[in-house]
Length: 311
Image (cartoon, rainbow, N blue to C red; front, side, top):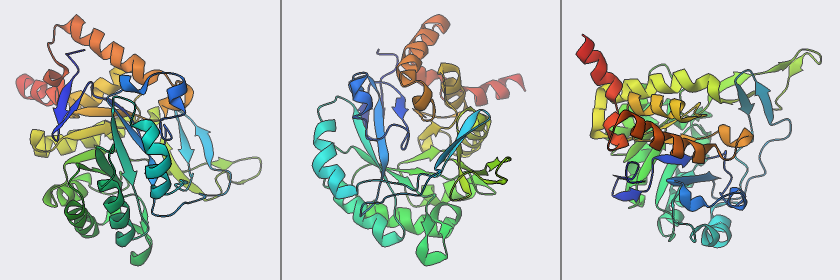
């Protein structure tokens, strides 16, 4: 599908459809259903320095047009991933991005250092929605200064592309986007989940054990598109944007792309339709054919141009 292949941060992708971290595990489970080589990229579930058991149940609850999760970043640790999982992933012809998180700056850097040396990892995606235990539990991604320092130091640790997945739980997304651009991040991923609460009216208490959880799914599509719009409006093509949030079909994906995303990630849709990324790839190709476009890149940020023309 030549209309969908593209190059970002020096890497060649066969299409702009990736899977989002936390919704696709480490890819091997879904590999039983289809060939992962059909995907543009796989972003694996978040990795920490040491194994984490995650939160106690309940950890997931369905909500109108979405879901709340509070898994607690359960994972086997970065060393297990490198030694046991990565060798199995390497046989697939797709790009592998490792999602990285930590409880403090040192842990982030330690995980990144290990992954930088790992053959088969094509890039790193920073999850900055995690609480910084050394700063009173405030998320890395809500403090521009803390975020700048983390990204700046991460860039010194790794030669691989560094993508920063921004938290939408801020008053102005441009503040944190500016911090990442100034620290020379290679790409911005917009957006992570929004904080929410679900209450069981019969038991008269919150459903999730942690009370709050991350809202994802179709409900957050307009918010993701709005934040992509804002960042692209300021930076244009100077920094690639990877769109994630509420994408269930090719029309959702196109909203992200038209707002300014160079590629997209499919997240919650994987839970109820594991084949959704493949359907989006095929439907994007058909849409381009129908519209007479020679390449999907012609649509990146086009909605901005259309407003200027109409004015």
